[in-house]
Length: 386
Image 1 (cartoon, helix red, strand yellow):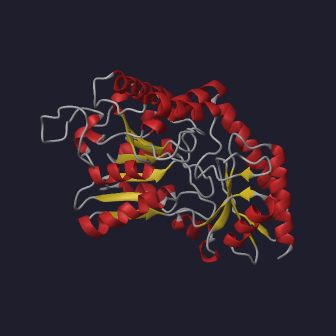
Image 2: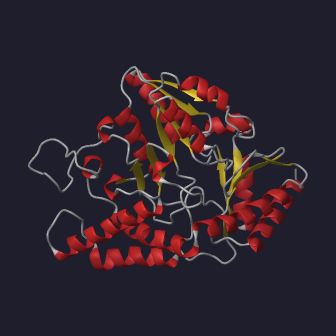
Image 3: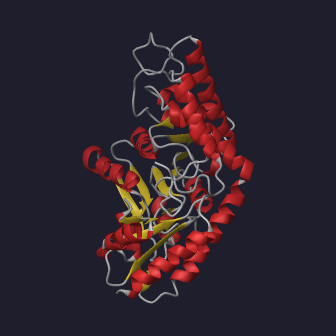
């Protein structure tokens, strides 16, 4: 489907769209000219596929300052990587901390580990403006095995003080797992920002869907992290046990080479334009929406105290977010995300849970100011009907 000139896509926090032309071309070229699996055969197409995989891994390692490329692990998505980290690390009797700003890809595995594997978890509270209670966090670190939290919240866009959090974790000998899905490609991210970093590639890195990664800090001992899955790795096939070498220990099965081919050039696209420049542009659009929407009668914009990314949540008094989102799409061609955004704890924190969540606008590199003006005008018209 061609992108309509009148359609406005502001659901980039779910999946960035459209993709850069170079990404589309790279995926098409892989499908048409390569198509083979890497590290499975000795023929020329398998070797070419392996080269693309190697270059994507090396490119991502460079992008996040990871000096050991083999510590970049690819998987199906961020959810798979987060489950790999949690299930690979935590054992019966362990206690883990998290926050009430997390996605269900963190909360649900923690709940399953609690019910089935005797793992305890505590949630650190955040204010209605998404500020973490750092005193509570520090007081609960003693005796914990790990802490897992987002870099940036997927509903409000609130950015957490991850460097301070990691400093506290190291002081208490607690392993820090960072969910950087919303932040990577928008905010600076370094392999030494956490012990384990998990993220998706189809948002800020512009890859196709169904690709995520996990990065292990060079000083993190991988012997403390069991492999979540076992299977074919293309290496040491004579052994019945999973190889211990990296990245093979954590990568089983055929990788999504279409998405990896797209990631390889998506990283180059970001590098050419500059991470800071892209983020500044998107924040200009987000700030315009914020300033204009908060002036509209009956519109509730959920405030964030501190740094944010390009996500903005709002509701219209007397209307469910689902009906607002439907009207924006049907009558104005504006594509948003409505509901709980797989983050019900966030909505309980900001006060939107009882209303069924919120409407989320998440701007991207391919939006422009004229589109933002159309969004404001559309929301104004819907709010007038309240």
